[in-house]
Length: 351
Ligand SMILES: *Cc1c(COP(=O)(O)O)cnc(C)c1O
Image 1: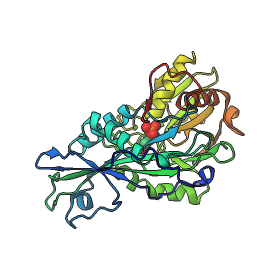
Image 2: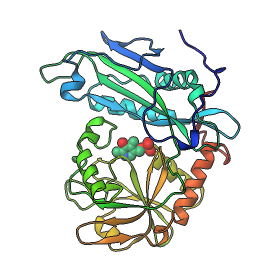
Image 3: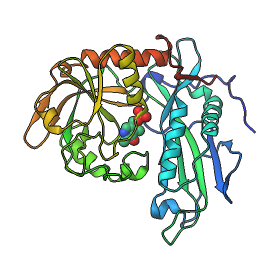
């Protein structure tokens, strides 16, 4: 059994120039559900999965995942950020797809084990790089008639990834998607691969047209702003208030970064409004800053959003990230790095 890899020397990688591609590390964590229970789980050096051709994942797409990062703080600790929220969200995602939730305390323990075992792969402080942690769960049991499988695998892979912004955060351009992302009361609020499969085409179309991402509107009325394919969206209005879109139809993914930024804004005495936001309101020029938020970038500034008729520009965040987004991002990354006091106890020390 592998328990410690702490003494291992750091891998010799060009940390600041890593990209966002999969690179095999030493260990993954794996646990299997069989006969109605999860086994103890273990670290494995085998980075492949061998499955029956009839496994449920291949037919009816029972798959959910998570994403968080482990990194080195200023003091040299290896930590991650609010892993309890990833544990809970993954359990919620699993329940929605009738999969057995992985126990939340064991989820956090498994993250700790796999990060500790791969300590040599955790980028050093100041490199901007992180060890991306990707928990996933798939149906492994045979299924031919439509029903939930009776066997599952929970796995965590880790892979070092480079800084999200190389050479500064340049505001990106979005386009309003022609396709929908999530049905009303569907699966838009869970982290499931199926939500990504159906957004790939619109993502590729957007890239081909020169946009970084799609902005999805609510699919029921095409009136309200929801989010992009993989990040929540935030706005700042002319009074400096942070405006956070809420969905009537529960089709926005509950981003941990977004929830943390809302708390940070309140701590900084920035006004916050969480409410439905119409596309018309955005198009009318009500907002002066816009950003996307998620684990990888924390906040990516958005400079423009295009639809068929309009080009909406965000005055205070068009050339570079605007002042409110900058302040929120610097505070949250400061908490993560250990340079700003972590009053809420969000940073989770691993080793
Ligand atoms: C993962 C994800 C996000 C970002 O969530 P974080 O917890 O902040 O990383 C936003 N939208 C979608 C659709 C996602 O899958």
